[in-house]
Length: 283
Image (cartoon, rainbow, N blue to C red; front, side, top):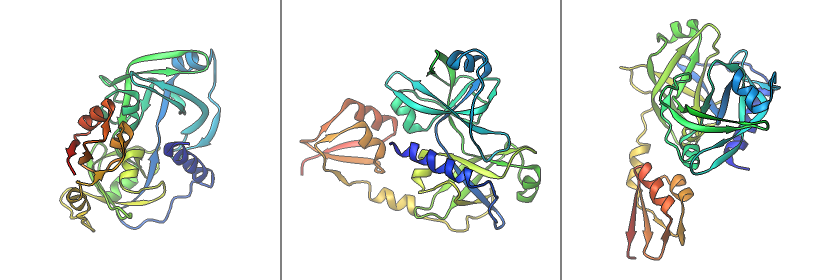
């Protein structure tokens, strides 16, 4: 079972235990980690699962009237497929697929970072269901980190819909998100949404707390963590074969390998896409 599937199960258990809002201090935001998922239009729901098909609710999500369905689909791209991708309900006007950058590498696509609903000019993808398949010419995105909040929350934080803010975390690996979109609606419940790549980078799990920083305010706990990591970006890879997965999992900006190490073509492509350097050393 892959880490994202485990994360999804953990989230579902937490959601089933209850939706009680945690007690928060001023400027604090609860964080939820969002795994890969699909929103389907009625038309595409019928193609994938059959005419007049209705999604079966698995569990409610934190946002009112939103739910995870029992149904899953397969995503297919030029380089590979991802199975058991959860469908979220209810259905929408347009079909949209949200993945992480790691997922995008596996599929072989380069989706843009967008807010939900902004799919014009985004990446293509094929969605496969038990009754048929749908090829989207656009609709695959990496979701922009964002905060759902009510108008009362917006007044309290002194922010407005469409504004970008920073959010910092106090986890084992502190991290500050520098471009977090504010989304305001009377139907929203206060919560920040990030994807699994962002969560893994900051050792963040659903239910942890971040602190909102508005432009001009100083972060409460500035951290030199990222600078420290760059200083240690010269660890030598000791394996005999450097693969795409090794490059994706590496936190180094420069991956040093020995002359005897075999570097796969996909590893080279992935390193280039991630702006990482593979350096051959003679040691």
